Length: 73
Image (cartoon, rainbow, N blue to C red; front, side):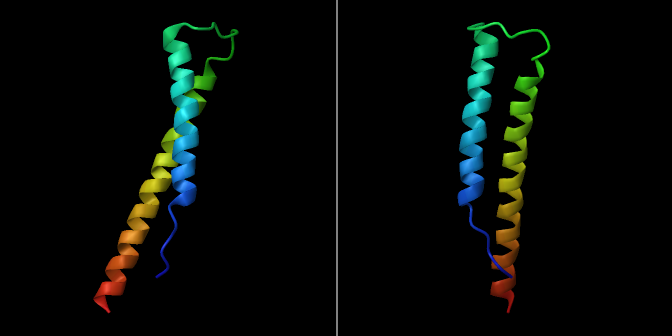
């Protein structure tokens, strides 16, 4: 079974994490006030961050399975 590279997953985690945490700090800190109707931005950034974490976990599980399969033969 083929192993997968973590580089894309790592980059996605860093990028979406920076965006989410910066939006979170802006929202909680009250640095700016969002226009009405744009409250969804924080949830969308958080959702993207969670999806990138799930993608990383899936790659870890797939690589663990591949390593286990190679060792069994």
